[in-house]
Image (tube, rainbow, N blue to C red; front, side, top):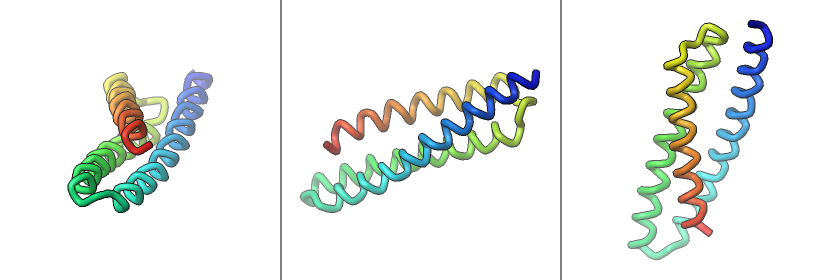
Amino acid sequence: MEQEKKENQVKVEKMEAQLKNWGIDLEQFKAKAGKTKAETKVKLDQEVAALRIKWNELRKKLEELKKAGGAASGELKRGVENAWSELKKAFDNATAKFK
């Protein structure tokens, strides 16, 4: 049980680090969007806003998981993993567009 708790803590710490990096990426995307033509800027701003919403949702779910600790339910863990997967996919797509 203690080993599982440590493994979960390490996983959460890795997720937090990646979430922080994605937060930095969001700011870079926003800056790049600001340098584009008006029509393109609107689309990119919308995409950045959508990413920010998903980013905030995942951050909240990750906090819930941390607070629950080893007592976290399978449903909560799956919720975090699903949100993680969605956000990663969205960032991969956005990164390709912003290059």
